[in-house]
Length: 232
Image 1 (cartoon, rainbow, N blue to C red):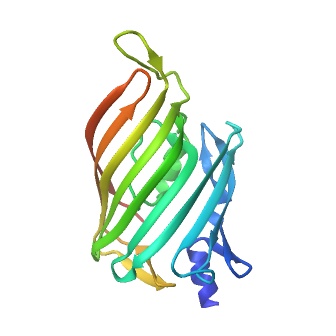
Image 2: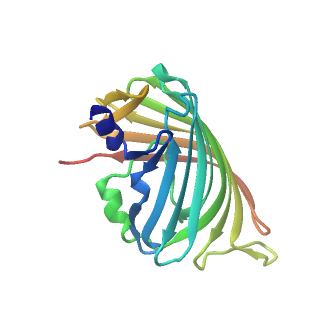
Image 3: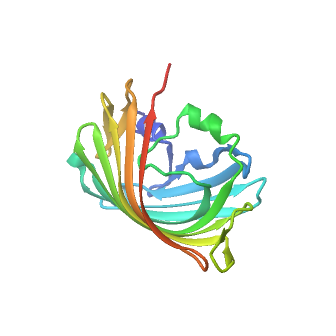
């Protein structure tokens, strides 16, 4: 019972001996672009292998009527420092102009905000990262990614000779850091699971970006900062 309780607390329901269902993906939210987002996620359990985990998902929006999907592999390297290698391929939507902080958890304010998100882009591509906990409260993701992004609104880029494009190849390499002072943890299947903290959580990200299209070619360095605090 304790084992199944901790598994369900992580949002995974065991199915058979080697698979588990990701319950969070069955009904993963609502927004103005997709409508109700329905789906399914499957991953392998440690009974198949403790050296790696495979996962896949699909999703469908009742409003945009589009299927999205993805697959990933997660390889634990050194559990005492939470060192893992993670690689994924996805075809999905992302909010236009948004920033993806690694290890960011959806909080209640984000859930409310997502209700009014109406501008999203479709993107397809790969991402790989090394996760490392350098201190108890400090978690880093060193990552690289390459995506092809298509805008769905009226946004287009026009160069000096009038060539217009709404499709962009985006390459990115960077580090995303999360500092959560006072965070408490539990151990399950050799993995450290966060129980949260009563203090603000700080996210910082620095990345080198290259954007390419038929009419656009630009490189830049981007700095992002976010602070989350849940008031109860």
